[in-house]
Amino acid sequence: MGRGKETQVSESLPTSQARIPAAGEPGTRAAAIAMYGVLLLAYSVNAADRQLFPLLAHDVRVQYGFSLSDTGLLTTIFTLGLAVAGLPTGYLLARFSRKTVLLLGIAIFSAGTALTVLARGFPDMLFYLAATGIGEAMQLTVMIAIAANYFVGYRAAAIGSMNVFFGLGAFSGPILGGVLLTSYKSWHAPMITFGIVGVLMIAIISLTVQPWFSETHRAADARADVRGASTLLNRNTIILTVLSAIGGLVFFGFTGMYPTYLREALHYSPKAAGFVISFYGAGALLSILGGWLGDRFPPRIVLGGAYFSLAALGYLCFHGSEAAATKAIFTFAYGAIGSGVAYVNLAAYHVKAVRSQLSSRASGMFVTSVYAAAAAAGYLMGGIASHVGWALAGEIQISLLAAIAGCLALSLRADQMSL
Image (cartoon, rainbow, N blue to C red):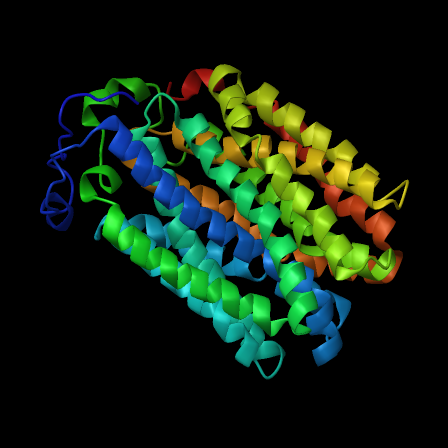
């Protein structure tokens, strides 16, 4: 992370990237951290945006008369956009600068958020929400690529810092959304507000983030990944892809439908549900610690322990006391382990499993594998809950799948990953 020799642009890079002005003129460490902070702030807006619609889903369902399973699909359909755009974004980054792709991504998900209020029915609302996922995939893939290339040797911790800001957004988003919903008596107000904030972040990033930081390829530190695979078709990446897909069903089944469970099964008010679900984001604030664990301990221990813990917590979240304080504590723990440990290290291990020249494609693989499954998570959770009740739905989709993933994580090989 310290200031080193000037960054060299590999001869193998496309001509368009090699021509980026000032790409070979790195600035100070403080300047790099400050610019990364701006990108993290934009990511927190993304996170707040992501957590917003599940809180509003009940109001949307009442207005349009959607079924529970259809409402569940709306809460997680943005992940289909993420899945579709994940790998293509990795290839797009080989043609255009990361900053360009990042700004385009923010523009797409901000526009999708604001346009949702114009939906006349299920199909066009589904389209707008899916479009937000395409924009998020572009932003997320770029963020992981920048973190993995600039902060060599601290990759999991750097990606963990992303999740800290995700936590800030996920914590503040439902609270602010609940306040706006209560004040304006309309779910339109929060959606329009967050769309406008996204546009403001585009302007800030355009003015502050410099190419020498966003486009860096730390060739001087290439020695750090000599053990990584030279292809995406390797044992660890295949296992991580399956773990990520299961994670998509587990993480987003919870975040997409837990607010609806609180409001419809436990009859929480919008503010009370927003309060409880915001603790998921509070738990994600421990992500740097989760990333540190991933940098220090074998992946089978980190991911295996995380998934087994999620299986237990998932059961507790859908059983026991209905008190808001108790639900908030379990939700905090779920966020700390699910988002702060499992999600962070799935992203980091995907990058560590291969050599640095494949980092963008590896991050795209992570995004695609997590969110392809997540696209159906809300629909599946809503469908199961409609037929057998919320408690059994939680046991099947949240707890059982997490336990299966925990067993699979034990087969990962740390000796075949980069440092």
